[in-house]
Amino acid sequence: MARRPPNIVLVMADQLAPHFTGAYGHPLVKTPNLTALAERGARFDAAYCNAPLCAPSRFSLMSGQLITRIAAYDNAADFPAAIPTFAHYLRAAGYRTCLTGKMHFVGPDQLHGFEERLTTDIYPADYAWTPDWEQADERDDAWYHNMDPVREAGVAAATFQIDYDEEVAFAARRRIFDYARDDVAPFCLVVSLMHPHDPYVARPEWWDLYAHGDIDLPAPAPALDPHSQRIKAGIQADDDAVTDAEVRNARHAYYANTSYFDAKLGEILHTLEETQTLDDTLVVVTSDHGDMLGERGLWYKMTFFEPSARVPLIMAGPGVVQQRVANACSLVDLLPTFLDCAGVSPALGAPIDGRSLWPVATGGADTADEAIGEYCGECAIHPIFMIRRGSHKYIHCDIDPPQLYDLATDPGERTNLVGDPAHAATAAAFAQEVAARWDGARIRADVVATQRRRRAVHAAMQVGRRTAWDYHPQRDASEEYVRSHKPWAATADRGRFPPR
Image (cartoon, rainbow, N blue to C red; front, side, top):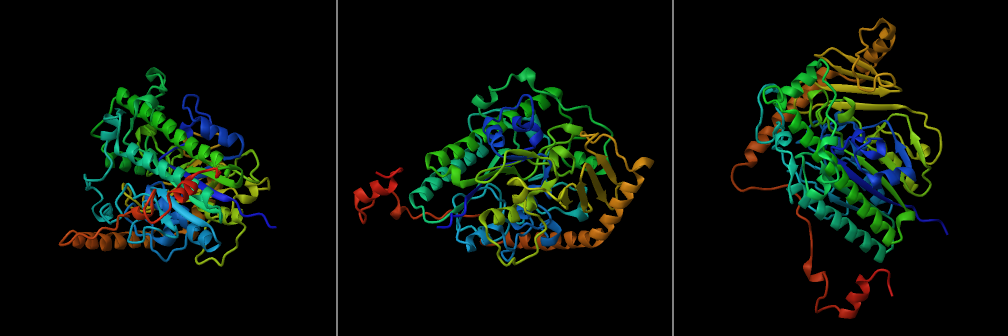
């Protein structure tokens, strides 16, 4: 009899840079579960998001497509229901598909191929967070980042993010038990947590893992490129400077919340062990983007520098070989990877921009070494593009000087090689590729047009009766626990695992 395809469990952090994890070598940050997963699986050391912002990154991950292909420009961009996702393809192949936690879907479709969704989202599903590139110097103080999360970092017993992640992790563990009780088909479960995303506030037990004096401060900031200057102004870091003490507090809380995320990962892995499904499950851990965390004087994301654009990516499970993978890859590669892992080759309903990482994860050669990035969100006024190929990273914006870095010799991205005669040919080749790949003026015109449409729709929807797109989890309490229309013994037997 043919072996059943493996289950797939994708555990996502939010705003987690690999640089700030023990699994990727940080000497202080404690991530024992992530480290143990890497020690029995594949750790990808040059994995990137395709857009350093929450919703665009997640839409590219789900669809396997770059954001300019699907107009997923910012945190209030539509994710149209007609775009196929890995959840659609796996569901069509017989997988049970389930999401618990954040995915930042914008629009009335809040499932996008998942059979069920166990929690609401933590962020709004409407157009409220639409940027305005035509008024780039104006801030929307209701939702734009500022320096308050840095200044107010510290300790609390509860926050809205802790409440959310506790619910998300509990729902995930409960559903894993349900799948084990009703073991009829493989499952794909996405567990998407909020931490260590700002605000930088941690519970005491995670804060106390770290001696405050041990928390490292960012390296001195170099001269900033124009986009970094725009970000710094956009988050009000120019006129609202923070002290070293406040920076240390924020980094302390971020490290603590990274350990909290790691503990939630441990709970998921333990539940897979308890249900005897771990050996039949591909576990993938990643994030939607990183966090500058004060490096270069910048915070949060929105840039293609390494702490913002790189993400952790670790895989372990049936067939995965223990290794470190040096070649560049990105989140659009996960859709074809999941299909390869599941052994399905559907008729694709849309072009795929990613490549499967399954051959290299299972010990084969990786013939590619590339990641592509696009950014069209707040704090920008023109599209920004990135190509990471081999050790080189090239960043282009039509209105800014280009940037070229050799990450093998300059991992901190301190020396822009564009003006170096020794690298003139490399810079010229990248410039030609950008010109051939992207029409920046056309993309900017489309970004502005979608922003106008969404702002008009959002303004209208604030008048009269409110119609929300936010997801409302479906539950039928009449079918839960002990009910009079079901024998008590049947309920007890159904809920027990392992069965008697």
